[in-house]
Amino acid sequence: QVQLVESGGGLVQPGGSLRLSCAASGSISSIVSMGWYRQAPGKRRELVATITSGGTPNYSDSVKGRFAISRDNAKDTVYLQMDSLKPEDTAVYYCNAEAKTLLYMDYWGKGTLVTVSS
Image (cartoon, rainbow, N blue to C red; front, side, top):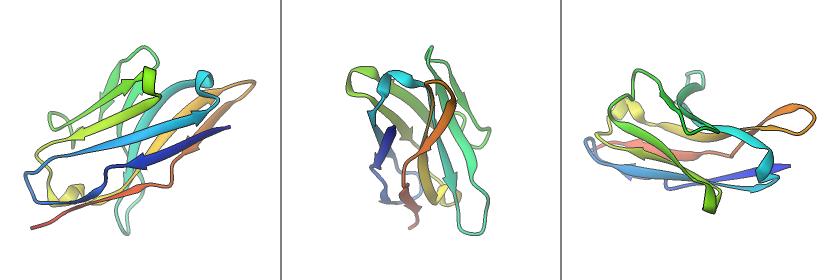
C-alpha cells in the first residue's frame, strides 16, 4: 500500500556528511508519521529519528546535534541530514512509515548502507 525507497548511502570519512532520502509512493495520504532506523551488524535495529505529521522531530541521544530529519511533502520525501559522522554510525539505514487506513500499518524500505571509515 505504501512503498519506500531509500537512497544516498555510501562511504564517507569520519567527520563527513551525508544526506539520505526516502521517497514514498502508494497511499501517501494515509501516512501519519515517518522515521529513520538503523541496524549495525550483530546489533538490534534502533531508532534514529522520527518526524510526526505535525512536523515535530525526535532524535536518539546518540545523534542529537548531528543529524536532522525533515520532510518535503510536495515531493513525498523524507530526508536525514547526517553531519559529523562517526565510525559508530556505520549501519544499514531504514526508512519507516506509519500509515492508517482502517488499521495502523508499518512500512519499511529495503535500507541503504552507510559506512563511515577512513
